Image (tube, rainbow, N blue to C red; front, side, top):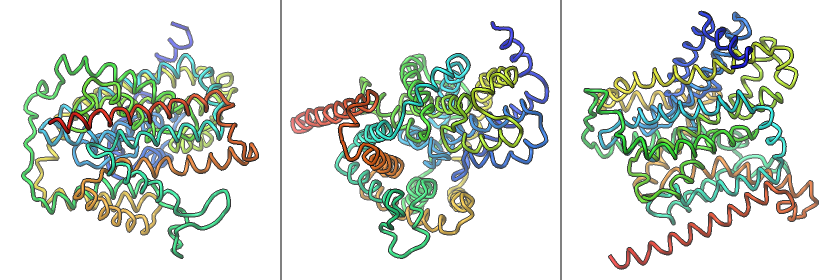
Length: 497
């Protein structure tokens, strides 16, 4: 091992640095598990503490909060069908059904195991090939972002569940909702109907809280179904079998790679990578029809992916001073406040501090794994709380999470409205995931399409002249053809039955 890295490993176990690792990881898991809270909010809450710390412990506690919150979002996603963060949106698709099958403990174990592996692999990439990966990210401009978002939109079919038509309707409704507000290119108001609060459009977190969390509360209150008994008597009951572990390995590897790549691209994030990983793994699975019913692959892929984005997002932040997502944007401000200036000179001026940070990033993945495994016997007990107590508490957390996002009552109203919409969507069989995907990717596709055409003077060939964007477009076409081919072959089988 390089002498600098060895010294960094020793420094990472200094009492104050390890304590901050502990505080950030545990705090991040708690923050991520609370609906409406996010890693960026956790980093903001740490700012008063960061002021009092030296550079290395300050950097470590911020990164630990980032990693912990990314995993923490899966806890509420699995137990309550309420993604704690947007990055846990795809975890709901198989995590919640597994919990409803009485295997919430196993779902949580799979989530933390996949999260730790994804974070560990991203940490290794951060350690050894960060500068090279950052150069690749610089090649992404408007045409590449548009092509990437269009490819992401093809995932709506995969996240549609059993009824693709209803899934596509839900997805296109999300695309329509993404157009509400001020057009960034022209400055025109669209579909605001004179309501000032709609000028900024719909923030993803209140919509996410409404579609998944509040809608599930309304469904539970209306159905009054019996509570599912969870088997948490022994840890062995929650550990996946050998066959399940084998089936998880490839999805974890695929999800990690996708997460790292998406994380490196500035402006992307875990919300995109989790759906992308889920759909890629589903399409290449030997039993794609089981996805959405509660299988370990459907949890392992998105969880390894969204945690893979943590190390990936830190690559452009540390090497170029460019934040990869919202959390790293807040971290950039925090780094500047403590005297750390990310960029090429960071490795020269604070080389040993960076080495310590890299080693601490890898160590915190094992800490997260430890606390996650310990929690697998604790978190499922939340499902034993009587629903007359649990449901009001979930609603309170949902409203608080929506409000604290911008300290705006309008976000609470938006969450409530989408909760009602989500309730009727569930009753009528319309999946919520495609709508969320449309709202996330819609602005990215529209804005970068306009930018690319403005720069190229309305020459559509710009999307085919650049290798990366052309590759994404080809993959998009193949994805659509594959989906159409698969659905066409399923219909005759159903007709025969």
